[in-house]
Image 1 (tube, one colour):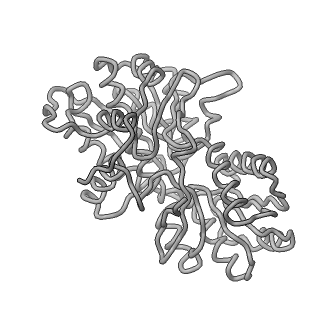
Image 2 (cartoon, rainbow, N blue to C red):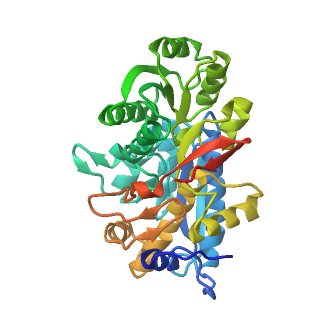
Image 3 (cartoon, rainbow, N blue to C red):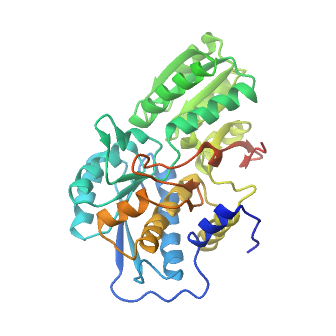
Length: 381
């Protein structure tokens, strides 16, 4: 594997992020990590690559010596996109004495599982941008961490790109009625106004919507020059098709919820020219990203996406904690290792958790991407 030059800090982080050469084969009783993902249902395009990445991560971690010298086993369960199922599965995993939980794929599902994980002092790493789950009005939730850039970073990246690169002046926001869409919409509207953009229309749609014509006709009447899509089911792809059918002369910018080949499959040729942000740089990957991409492709014969990298990093963060805290695998020790961590170079970002920041990602980890010739391509900045 070709290694690109990296800054000294990144180089030190890479040493803890990739499998060491000549690593000792893990032995003894397996260490179990649980994962609750939305592998079936409307959010399967997110949950499926997350599942694949965890399977690849299990192999990679064991090749690198396991966790505290033990082989790791990641037990992956499907909540079907339903919060009540997430709660049931969390109870099941806790009874199996997992050292941590990865998930959920969705905001509401994360909340449902965490209520149980916290009482059992089991750390949970979730894969949505909703930082309000751990940064609450009551304070920092002690056992909940995030492997995805928080909404505030994403909205800043998207808003500034629309203003500075696309010349946007008037924007419309189409957003899912679920918590992911509602929170993202609120923060995007606030950020756009801060950046001097005029938010001329805000339209909500059902998660399972198959026709967004009523909302798009209002967008057309608003005079918007740019439409933001904040959702993660197939509805944003349907919206893009209908934007083209209505011949709306607008730029289309989506959140990372649309960043999948499934979006391109559903939108078809109409996806060309749609923008989104990404953390996984598949166009010019660094050494850690190259390692992840290679491992994923080798096992699944497919290119990974953002959702896959979120899960890959979540799994490796448990290995990182054990490497830095003397192999202690109880919940409080893992949390302490993360909250006092040196930078960890993941495939998604450089993470630096603290006691006050359970996200630890900077905006420099985000890139813009565009659909070109049926593929997502990172835009050179």
